[in-house]
Image 1 (cartoon, rainbow, N blue to C red):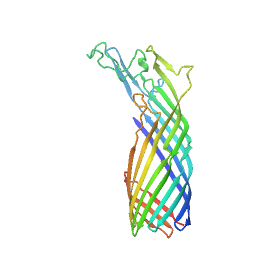
Image 2 (image 1 turned 180 degrees about the vertical axis):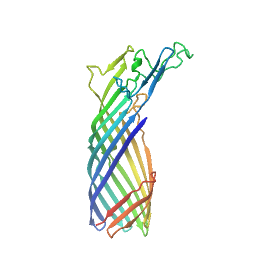
Image 3 (image 1 turned 135 degrees about the horizontal axis):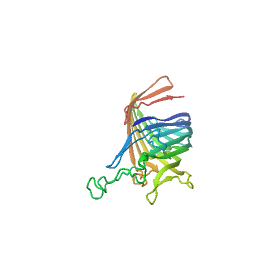
Image 4 (image 1 turned 30 degrees about the horizontal axis):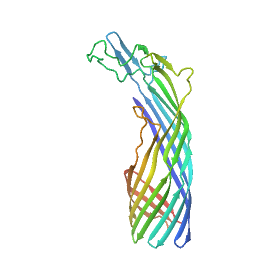
Length: 333
């Protein structure tokens, strides 16, 4: 088996925000944001091998990827996904300072949803001749008797074509990306070198991907009389269409931060429901999405002024991703 794959998922956001003081203790802010999403997946799975079938009467050896065969006998699979798009949104904020040491803030972020540009193509092969539930020793449980079952059925699928494979192709140019907005409130207290921040956000919308795909199938299968027939039938060549949704429905997002001097320790707790539509398990039953999933994270970082109006914040340690590094550059008018 040879496997060649690349996976690239980039989601970059840029915010431009303008703020102005209305009164001595009240300010407002307005901003626009650009969210660029780029998804690129390439996978080539090359499966080479030989199927050998032996009985007292016959010994068959057939190889996959045999160029001398006229029928399709490959198990190779390929995936090609390439979608990209920029989403634009906005935000509004109010900041109230009732006391010199206390700040109260409210922020509203507009949800975003957009159809991405690009395409998806997945080609999958499978071997219908495999009888996974075969009984090696037959109903009598005794080996080497006439009722023993074969892994292949040479009576219905010719012994010379036991490596014939079916093909399924998924094609789509529809992928909808949803990015949630939020309504958040926070309180910050600052005395001397100590700073304490507590905030809560109510997410609005989903963080999800929704795609619609056309499914094309062709190959060979058994009919009700256990005979092999080729499909699709001449009067049934249209593709079936299915839709899938995967993502998270965020329900609550709480944050806390404690700072001393240039250093800060922060934590975050997210409660979300899983979104899963269109997917089925091994029993062909719809997969039930999980509810009330809890995600937690923590980070330790520091911040300092590069210039009088330019501040830099850097995370030194981030859990559960200890190698993740995140920085924020802020210019203050």
